[in-house]
Length: 385
Image 1 (cartoon, rainbow, N blue to C red):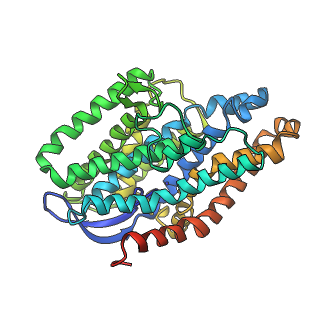
Image 2: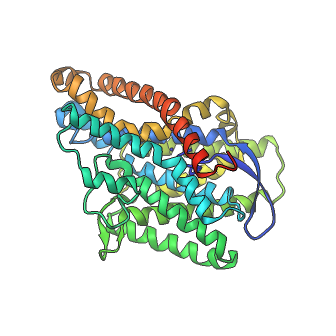
Image 3: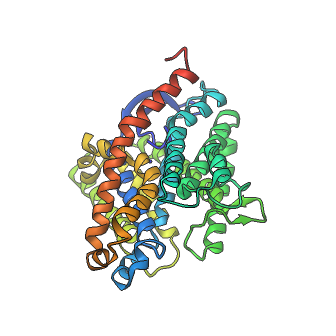
């Protein structure tokens, strides 16, 4: 959100073998700040819609319109996950151990979010706790095609897709020849994005809706995004294998690209709904931005490559998993009886809500995510622990 070692921003020394990686790790701090920025985009998308702040009158209409495309940020997280899945791949890890690691990283906060909705139901903050749907969510089954509706943690659909698509690509990397999957992954990515563009009229969104009652749009998003992340990784390997002169000219070139792409993507997928209705342009732009940030050849990517970026990045997963519940609490205790204040000061109300969510994410990271992850690690990997 690391969402697993899903967003593991650990640089791994590359080798020339067919599976591409060894295990010398170094942190990519600048990717953490990208994750934090686009976590804010998702936050704004969920809060500035017609079911929440957007229902409070014309004062929120502008925000609702200009954050309506922010869901595209989920694709950015899929791309990041695909990149680092390939970049940190270790063929010595078994599929079972890989699944265990995903459970250790993802399950604690899924369970924590479901538990808080359960408490909210007991105390009357919500009145529709979805018992059976939430059980499916605890098994990462919420959006892979065998459910008819979400549980209470609606944005958990991303986690279920990420869990199974990560396993799918890991299995391919481990048991297929590189020449084989270098052929069919680009085809899979192209077909997936083609389907998404035409099915969603360029919005590239959708979750539970299925294709011929088999694949959900969420699963297709995961296949497309993580596959594109892998292809971005292959471009990265090729670029770093070529000679590079660290001159003022080359630094200026990369800085211009980084500055333009970062500004364009933030503007177009966080604060403004661009008139061009095919969001595939944003996905292409983000893939190039990710590539330039990983290369760290421009001034922007170097400046953002600092430990403060990682401090913010640590809280992304917790922010993502808990902000929906916090919205219900914020609405119940702060907004329901004070709608006039929210309508009069929309930016202040959203800022206050975000600060509350962020502080709760900090608490959740330190008091739930890390301790629970360490506990599960000792149980699932007792020898290593």
